[in-house]
Image 1: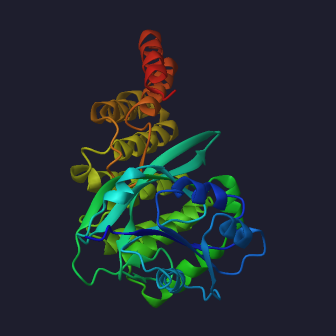
Image 2: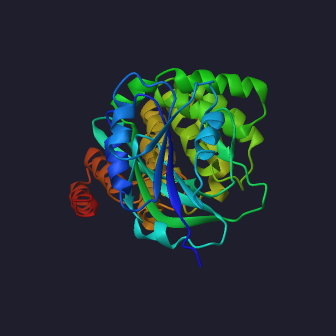
Amino acid sequence: MKTPTIALVMIVKNGAATLARCLSSVQGYVDDAIVLDTGSTDDTVAIARGFGAQVHHFDWTNDFSAARNAALACSSADWNLILDADNWLVSGHDLLSTLGSQSFIGQVAIHNRFMQGQEVRESIEWVSRILPRGVRYAGRIHEQPVNNQGLIRQRLEVHVGHDGYMPEGLAAKKGRNEALLRQALAETPQDAYLAYQLGKELAIYGQHDEAARHFLQAMAYSTGAQQFRHDLVVRALYSLKQAGHLERAILLAEEEFPYWQDSPDYFFCVADVFLDWAIQHPAEAESRFLPIVESSWLKCLEIGERPDLSESVAGRGSYLAAQNLAVLYENTGRAAQAAEYRDKARAMRPG
């Protein structure tokens, strides 16, 4: 019986800075590498060919699905691993050779690195990136595999790094995704996922007031069953807070309270919202609002880390919550508790 084959399938433009890292991370674990270049002016093509990849060219049409599908059409493999130039395979290499002949859509854990303040943070997003032959994409941007065959989506222990949200990556693509998202949302204005993605794009670049409006629009059209709902709620709370809409943020937190009892990210953002509210209402802070802040961060520690939740940020269920509690206790005259939680934060912090 023929062993199933797997190909790396990529669309790339001016990815010379990171492409070699991606290709080397899968070398020896895929049967073929296909790079569809959409108009590079750097060394992208030369680097791809240096790794023995098939290089094909495609005229960019402001449609990610069109490019993805053109790349997939160049593959004859049984399975296709979809990565971008700013991705690299971290773990799960051996699993790629054991996918077998049963068809399903494989979801991998994307570890998104980003800056918050002066520190690097990481969130985990489960994305469909391992596709059986014949599956194609739909959507101008933030494209999704079309599942006409009713295939199950299966989470695989495959972990992929992504640093496209770091400052260098954000600067390189500033404005591009926003324009495509606005165009796509104008075409389907009640698409909750597109509204969420536009809000996310705006928030990444600090435009929190408009981001919050799109997040609330997405809330109106989404359902609790959609995978992105968790991240949508958390980002909506954060953007409302950043934009100064604290009353609306508190109302949203109350509306969503029954649904996120196992989310450290939800309680972490609730604590942030009420901390800002306490600062604005000092007369009632100690008696009414700071206890909510404290109990929310304690709830984060009680829940612990939840990397299975959509874009859960590492540390919110451990050292980040403990660190914030230490600061809270120190600023409210509870030195012994402050020292205790500083030690806990230090012990929980990776490395």
